[in-house]
Length: 78
Image (cartoon, rainbow, N blue to C red; front, side, top):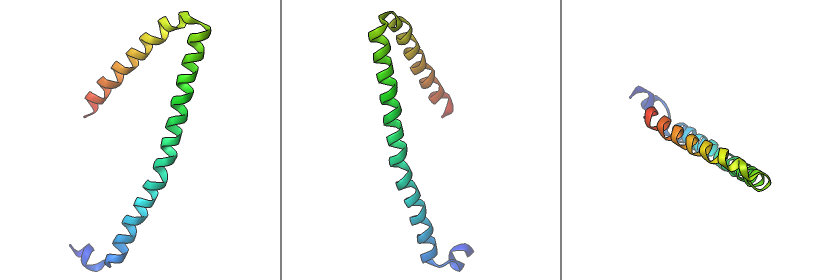
């Protein structure tokens, strides 16, 4: 309680608005990077599957295994 009594309200609000500004400027950059990485991965998978259709026999089980491991990891991390 002493912190809120000795610290002006404006300083507390300024701290929260600075944190929100950091978050609002970081999220679009991270989303852009996510879209670029997903596009690169999908494009690479399409090119590989068109040039070497036999690669799909390896690519699909790896994708399924990755999804299963991800689901199990998320379940264990809760």
